[in-house]
Image (cartoon, rainbow, N blue to C red; front, side, top):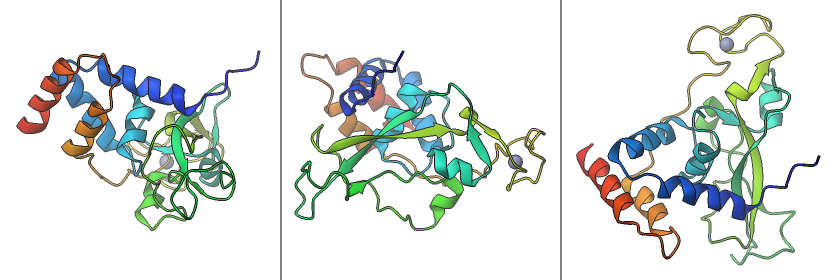
Amino acid sequence: MARARITPAHLTAHLQRLLCSLATPRQWEDLITAADRIGRYSPRNRAIILAQYPNATSLAGSSAWAGYGRRIIGGQRGLGVLAVTRSPGGAHTRADHEQDVFAPDLRPPHEQDTPAHHPEPAPYRGESGATVVKVWDVTQTAKVTDCAACGRAAEAPCAPGCGGIPGAPAESVTPAQWWQLVQELPEGFDPEPVWAALNEVVFLV
Ligand SMILES: [Zn+2]
């Protein structure tokens, strides 16, 4: 049976369900900690990734993982992230969809310290012009060659803490960026408990 194609609207729904569920400071702390652990993705995409895969730490596209001697484990679903298409004038159109995709940085986290081949994703401005790109967490991959990071053989597990790749650059999501995501929650939803819980976390830490 064919899997349903994941759309930007699906990802937005995942994100909103996650944010609507965060009614205690502890739940926000967990999300913020997890988001800070993930490499260079937009705050929106970090939350979208965690909504799909709460334990995500190190993400990359399948060809990037292949370049690091890892393959996607059979049956592991790619995690959707939003990329934005943009015309030179700034308007989103279908025509430039193919040639001008501002894709997220799909390289493994340790490579993201260097300037990206892709520019940073353009600000997300709604469903129009957005497209879904798939990434996989390191735990969804397996070594097929000796590890370039710790040197252990393909058939041996990596050294503790290696995970096959060095750690991601630290780049915290700011309180203002979290507030912005909460402000986009659907109309009719009572944001008070979510705001109150977030408020407590961002002003206490
Ligand atoms: Zn290793």
